[in-house]
Length: 275
Image 1 (cartoon, rainbow, N blue to C red):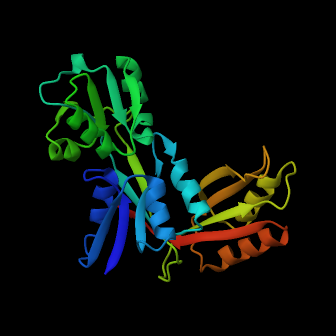
Image 2: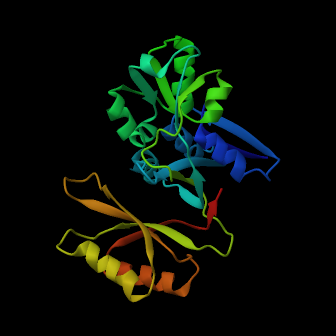
């Protein structure tokens, strides 16, 4: 039996995505945890075998608590999952849009609804997940506070949808990654994620790294810079390529970059699933 963790409680988008992605794995024990860092730590401590966590949203951008957790615990990505997200303003039964003064949700969800929140002058309150936000609104009984979350979480906790589709853009997708401690051994992967730490800081260091991929005809689908933690202004780069780890050109790119003296750490090679 596999133990798989995701961000709880019941009703999060993480839960919806995980249940759909692993729908054919009947022999699964689900573990819900209170925060994204807790979910990633559970994998690192072998409390669970795998987890599913959000890493990027088409409106709000990258989710740094996930990225930093992957690096902190030296975890591996074994799958990439794109999930369509619709966000709704949900409140207690009997409350109306005109009553709402504050809105509560996890930061990435709030960042996806900035225009709506600004337009209505709502006070921001943060929670560890959309489901935590909905549950806390339910438990408070407050008619002036609403949560941002899914239609399913509103139904689950007996709340009502005050306004539908409050995200800034209708085409809203969240990208999740399935994470474990060991690299996937499956073949046919289409992407590779790596962490490149330059040997030293100098003008054009990132450009010189990117030129290697360009020269070998490898397209890049994602780049993220994160501080090394050693000193201000010193960065390392997460780079996702549209090439599998077992491809000859990918192996050649890594060897060239390492020849320049840079450190290359592969976080995983995987395929993308659109749910």
